[in-house]
Image 1: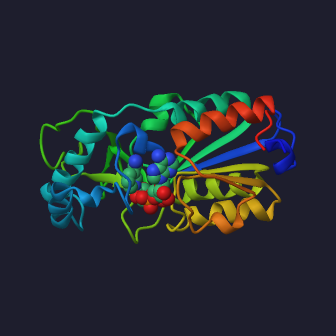
Image 2: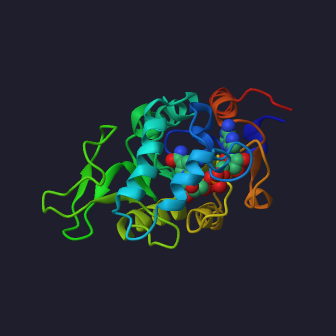
Length: 248
Ligand code: NAD
């Protein structure tokens, strides 16, 4: 049976498509995930620095942890899965990329319609005047970096328990609700509200396809689960979708 028969859809540029990505898509680029084997917490220095970071998040200690992460990611390049998603954006007339990642690799790969649910480690935010500024250089000249209003910036990254930017979230929910084809790539599906989005897509009778080497909390609901690494399985699946190669 072909993928198209399994999914019961005809892929064409008019399909409203959405991809939700998590830390797993950047794993092949060398960015560690958050849970399980290969996670950032297996690195003693990450644990040490993270234990010193915390509210109000604009301290030297918090930035030391973020500078460690920023340096690591600065040495990483987008992988073929990031590039495939950029290609998919070019194919579909209506395509949204919802990401939980903060590493900026989707933008580097050429994606444009990106909704960054959890912010971006290459930006800082002033909690006094509200400015969001790009901080692309690493190492930064000062820790913490300062806003033009002379207040210490915090990383523009959503911490556990903090709300997601309302506009970004609303756009992501709308995209998920209206989608007809929804990809879930490299996420454990345990962080809400991102984990609700594939379920909203299902309510719209979208076909939801998961790509992950391991089963996840979302697996039981999927129209199709592909067990594999994003950098291998996604480009292959995309090619098969376009050419409708027999996979049975
Ligand atoms: P997670 O760490 O909870 O789960 C990662 C998932 O990726 C797992 O299900 C794992 O099986 C899968 N995976 C591992 N290797 C893979 C591969 N090669 N290809 C595809 N999938 C693979 O990540 P999450 O669900 O994104 O939630 C973690 C939270 O931590 C997010 O909120 C995110 O903001 C943050 N985070 C971001 C980054 C990043 O920006 N790259 C990295 C770590 C954590």
